[in-house]
Image (cartoon, rainbow, N blue to C red; front, side):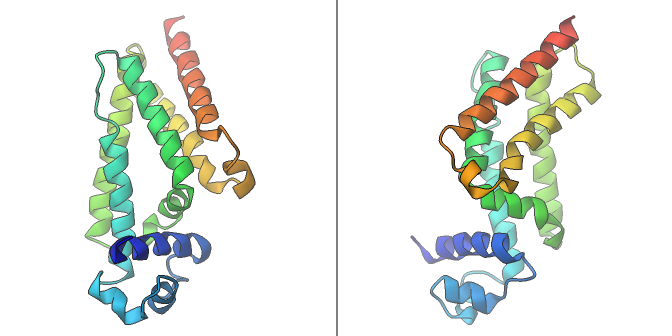
Length: 187
């Protein structure tokens, strides 16, 4: 594992355990196997580390929203599956991104907020393709409900979050919820 990756992974753990402001550069360096000042050879400081963590997460999440099927329903199911597996694999990072987004400083905050809007818009587009009769408000509520349910794993007790089959259960629940929503708009 390269040093940058080690620093980022360690930062995600510490920010989860102690919060962004509760984590010192010295502690981060020590836990990553470096001296605190050595961190500055890799990143300008904690702000850049936090922004990099968020940016990497958004790269993966946005990348998974690109349509790959002619069938809109298959694309949406693929997005749900990716989102659920990402949240289960990176639940500490998901928790940090929800709790510490206000700790980001500009220009990183603006850039991450733009990318989050892009991500949500991609979800809204995918849901609107599957539920064409829905209003913009309904699509927005369906999007936030789906993402919120899946991202809630970041706050689950560790034993429950690590239980076998959790991502697929979340996929099934999100899919069934969206299917019920679609049926409701048809009726």
